[in-house]
Length: 117
Image (cartoon, rainbow, N blue to C red; front, side, top):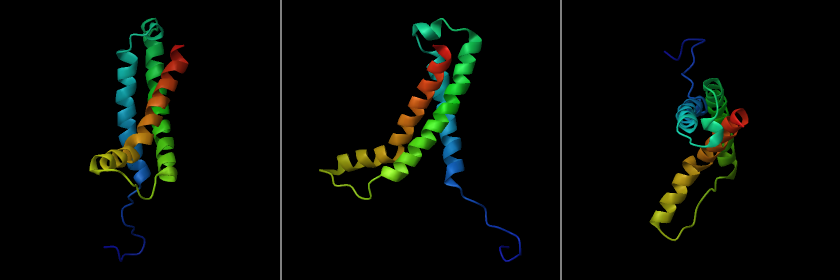
C-alpha cells in the first residue's frame, strides 16, 4: 500500500509521545500538589485560585519535562564507567527519566506558587 503516490507511512514522533506521557504525569502531580498540600498559602487559597494553580502547574510541568528532555538529549553521556551492576542500572534509570522528572517538578512548583503566593 506504500507504493501508491501520496501515501505516507504513519509518523512516529517521539515528541508527541513524551508530551502525552509527561502531560499525564504533570496533571496527576499538580492535582496532588494543590489538593494535599498543608502549607498556609494553599490552605488559605480559594477554590478558583487552586484551580488556576492546577492548570498553570500542569502546563508548566509539561514545559519543564520537555525542557528536561532536551537537556537530557544534550548532556547524556555516550558511555558510563561504574563500579558495579547496581550503579550502572541506577545511572541508566537516572538518564532515562531523571532530568524530565526534575523539570516537571520544578515546573509544577513554579506554576502553583506563582498563583498561590
